[in-house]
Image (cartoon, rainbow, N blue to C red; front, side):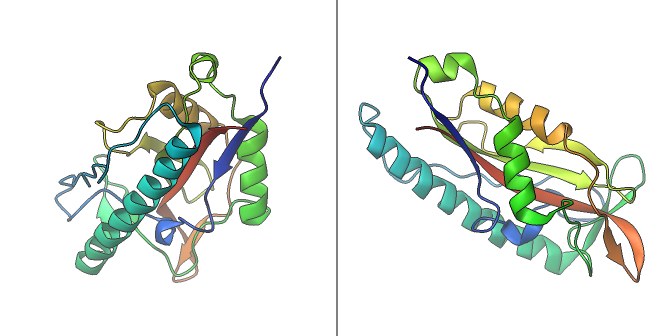
Length: 192
C-alpha cells in the first residue's frame, strides 16, 4: 500500500529574512553556519523524530537568521566569482509569481519523495539558497544545511532539482531597477 507523502516549504515561518547569503564580505570569503543538534533522539519513534526535525530546523533557522543579519549589517551586497553584484536583501524583494502560497503549491506538486528514503521512512529538512536574477531566473542553487546533518543526500538532490525547475520569479528591485537577490527557503520532507 502506497503511503501518502507530504512535503512542506516552511516559507512563512522560517523565511529567514528571505535571503540568507553565505558571503561575509566583498572578498567573497564563505562563512559556514555550523549547527549541531543539542540533543539526541530515539530514531525508533516517528513522533520523536518529527519533533526533533522541527526543533532542529527552527534552531538552524534562528542561527542562520542571526548570521545573515550580521552579514547584512557589514555589507548588503557581495560580488560572486563572475563579478556579478548580488544583494542579500533589496528594497523590493523577489516574489514567486502568485506569492508564497503558489510557491508552496509548486513545491508540493513537483517534489518527488526519494524512493529509498520513503522505504527507509526517512524524513528531514534542507535549506536551499539560490539567486533570483534580474530576469527572474533562479540560479546558483545550493543546499546549505550542515554537511554533518542527519539529512539524506537524496533530499538535498531533490530540493536542488525542484528549485532549479521553478518558473521565472518577479525579480527584486533596488532604486527601481531589477537586481540579483540571494534567497533562501527551507524544505521539509515528511511521510504522512
